[in-house]
Length: 171
Image 1 (cartoon, one colour):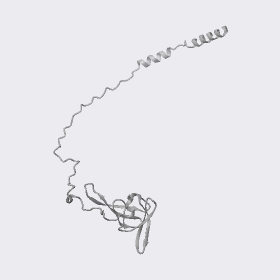
Image 2: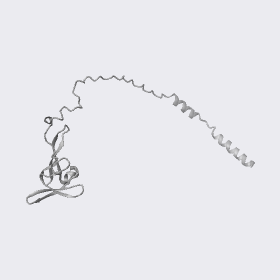
Image 3: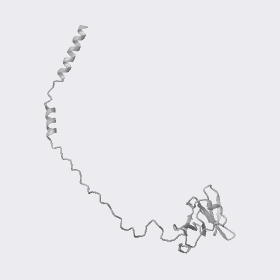
Image 4: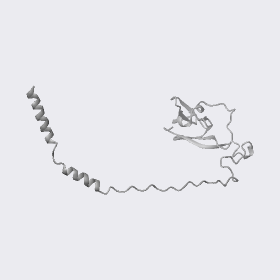
């Protein structure tokens, strides 16, 4: 046991003697780093004080109020209205962009368009039929597309006509 204690003491002294190296190069590096020019911090920018704004255009027209009287039918952009008494056709329950043209068919000298709905059912349509949710009336059928005229709100209480089409193979 005494031998073990002496061995531990000798090893400890040997380990401590390794710590007593010359560290002057480390002290020199620290001194140089401390004396080196660190740089400067830019001063905080000066902000201009808030200047309040006085709205002096209160006598001008309010841009958020309509300029036409929506109750007066003579000021509407058109007298066009959807026909609410017309019976609805099967393809009017689907948005126009969910329908796709898959081809044409000629039968008894009449040209038909073939339209596939989102449920993969193919419907025959011809000029004068309706499809889409915006009163889209078919005005022309070609081998590459079906052309429609839709009745859509104009944003100020009336309705306008808008051209639309469905190309073959597309939605």
